[in-house]
Amino acid sequence: MSQALEGVRILDFTHVQSGPTCTQLLAWFGADVIKVERAGEGDATRGQLRDIPGVDSLYFTMLNHNKRSITLDTKNPKGRQVLDELIKTCDVLVENFAPGALDRMGITWEHIQKLNPRMIVASVKGFGPGKYADCKVYENVAQCAGGAASTTGFEDGPPMVTGAQIGDSGTGLHLALGILAALFQRNSTGRGQKVLAPMQDAVLNLCRVKMRDQQRLERTGTMHEYPQYPDGKFGDAVPRAGNASGGGQPGSILKCKGWETDPNAYIYFTVQGHAWAPICDAIGKPEWKTDPDYMTAKARQPHITDIFATIEGWLADKTKFEAVDILRKFDIPCAPVLTMKELLNDESLRKSGSIVEVPHKERGTYFTVGSPIKFSDLKPEITGSPLLGEHTDDVLPDPATGHNPPLIHLSEPPKLLSHSDARLCLK
Image 1 (tube, rainbow, N blue to C red):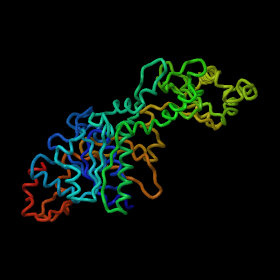
Image 2 (cartoon, one colour; image 1 turned 90 degrees about the vertical axis):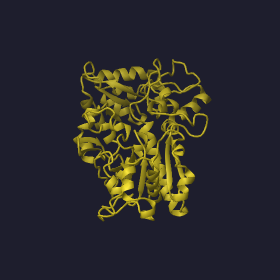
Image 3 (cartoon, one colour; image 1 turned 45 degrees about the vertical axis):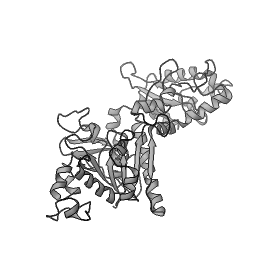
Image 4 (tube, helix red, strand yellow; image 1 turned 90 degrees about the horizontal axis):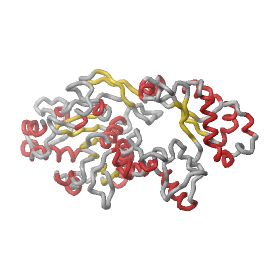
């Protein structure tokens, strides 16, 4: 089966999480991603949080599948010549260096355009243009700067970051979409362009319902679906709402059987209007369907705490899985709070390719997240991450052997760069 991005060549100057998330996604869909790393060191995550001494960490492997790795010293003049030839033959350069780093390396937009006017240069930065443009950012900084932390947690507690990597991986996903749009536009314009995905902007985009609520709050002074209503007070900014639903439907995480010893023996339960009658039937409170204090969403809101307490009482003798099995028969939206262990061993996720087992040359096999996007005519094959510099010879093979047709075609091999010189600056 041909891959969607077959023939697209990516020059990957990314590291850690945000950029590698982007380039891995493109590699899954068939792009040839060439990861450029420093000799002897490579991506910092190769050595971070190792579980096997001397072997690439899961942090690295799970963000760099389907890629090829070369080592290159861009400070070496001959290494720069190799890089220039790569720029000429690639479609996209992706980077998430600190602000200004690419320019300081001499890899300016003007230089790239001179070599390859069709190249797309895609960047992750902490902030877009403005007073913070030069500031460095990582995951939790982005969550705070993008509005997520201020709106996460409970009213009587501090701001909280989420375990979902919406700053790093979330930005990488946004950048991948931007690259695809730029590639599509290039078909008609013939020109490359710069694509920027600021982490603050990506987090803010994922928090758009909270910006919605900010404007509602400024207009009305209150928000009925928040747990602060009706007895609590609202300030001038969107408050933390605990586990209330962002969609306006009252929701909460409720205890199930075994919660005293299992920290994840809970389900998420939402009291949606269309499901109210089935909820009453499921929990044995049919009288609520005709009680004026419970018949409408507006009438229920002052009693919402008591309603959830009643539902929690009904859950007391049921495990989270037993409860969900019952409630789904009534078509009631709900879900168990699943742990990473439970997700890792979920048969349906493995069958769908959302969890895949991948071989690695040094660590053996391990499990990772597969493509979260499903297609009818495309099935991404997840392959192991590359060892440091593993594909240097594939990218710049020995011209004397004729094996592995070179990725870069030197216009004047004898004058521009000899094979032996190239080996020195690559390795």
